Amino acid sequence: MSIVLLNWKGGEYDTFTYFNTCMKQAFERMGRPTQIVNLDNQALHELSELHNKGIDFVFTWQGLGSQLGATETNPVTIWDHLKVPLLCYHGDHPCQMILNHKAASRWARHIYATPSFAMFANTYIPRTSVATFFPTPNWFPDGVKSRFEGDFFVFPKNINDLDVTLDEWRKAPQRRLAGFLLAAADAIIGEFRNGNRTNHHDIIDAMLNAEVMTALCGELGNPPELSVRFHVHMLLDKVHRNTIAEHVINELQDVPLKIYGWGWERFRLRNNPHHEFLPFDAMSDNAFQYASQYGILDVAPIHDALHDRTLRAMGNRAGFLIGSDWPYETFLGGDCGDLFFDGADGALRAKAERVMQSPEAHRTRCRDFAQRYQQQFSFFNFFKYLEGVSATIRASAAIA
Image 1 (tube, rainbow, N blue to C red):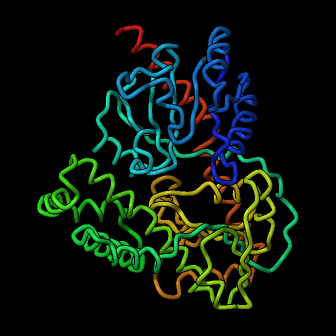
Image 2: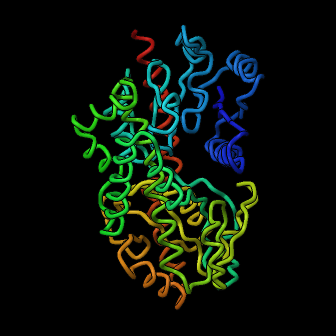
């Protein structure tokens, strides 16, 4: 019996290939043969051949391939035909690519890296099985680990310029929708500046009362209310992370930063001598970003999340500061607030100053956090959890 990892090579920076390469190594360290199948025109043939030899379960990121084999008239997927558990692990909010979050097949389960994502999925997506939450383990073996050089922070972040986004909404012909988007964006930005304690999707839902939903549905031609809700959440999803990203640049004007990613044209024009803007390479080729003295600055996609870049920093014994309100006291039982930042004036600047004064002390603090995280959320526990979910799927199918 083998484990199968579904891979899509079309992702930006070929992220999934890197993730799956690392994941394959991690599963094989657990003694389990693991195969990677690319989602291309050979996928069905390869899956059929592997099925003949025995598949324990199939693992896929973001639900990619979960609807493989289904059509508009026939929702039955290849997983229903093969009778193989499909475990979909999501780091994206359910409003992104809703098709990949559907939960109709008895052979598929959806697991989210963030509790608020699982809550949204369970609330709004019709389900045959509950969506669950399991924190992302650290399985990144980059290997920087010891030699740190360069007195600067690395800030790896693509951005959708908030000024451009808000200006587009101001000019949009759907005035009710535009007005709502602008008001919600203002509330999300204000929450980050006031302490980042509320999930921005909860802010959106609180504003989408019955009267607003009726008005928006009417303006958009009366589609199903759930479609409008998901559309609004999708449009607003990146406001939170883009707000944090711009805050980093503005707050750290006099701090040496190497900024990797696209979308920074307006900020590049400032010609700030402390800030250098650089392009990203493939995910597999950018371990160097964790080797600076000061470490990385990271932006979580939602207030209660960690992020894969922080996990990679932890795997490299490197330093990090992350814009997140991840509940460390709940999960680790201690105060780790010096590693997390919000939008309060001067708060990030003070933490960056502390890092610059003693980079080694900061790395030691990050390594302590990484060790505690590893003890609580090891890859072994993640692996056993996946095995348990797979066994539950098979048992339920046998009863049905």
